[in-house]
Length: 162
Image (cartoon, rainbow, N blue to C red; front, side, top):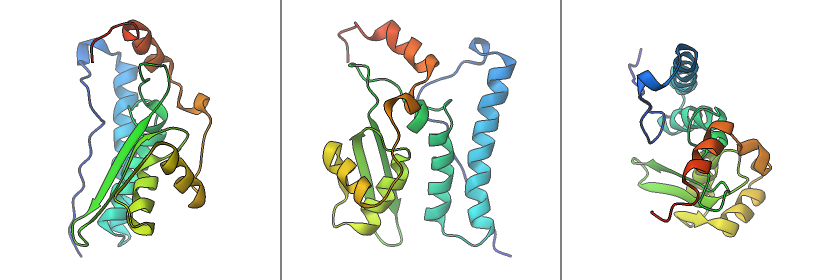
């Protein structure tokens, strides 16, 4: 039996334990565990490391607690723009997407860019058009809304620092 390992992280930023409730901690741990299991299951069934990475990241993107996909932070203008990238070291290939809206799972789009285009990176409207051509799932802006992220944005939206 082949041995393998998988590691994930829940995104950028710091969550200080004293600032969250036991219930919130449990929810974050469940989200991380779900992502680990999604990737692990792919590997356990003999899937590729690339597919395992994608499965784990899709799980994080689908969980409103993490700042990717559904739980993305707001931009200065109050919108959601997401980025994602993926690399295949063995094939020396990569795919990335930047500044996209409406794409349910940006990591899936990054993979499609790597596998089905001559580009390494697409952004904005061009990336959205490619996602539509690839048949990827789109969501309206409300899908990405999180009250927690909205409240964070309200605190900083009028600051002029970057």
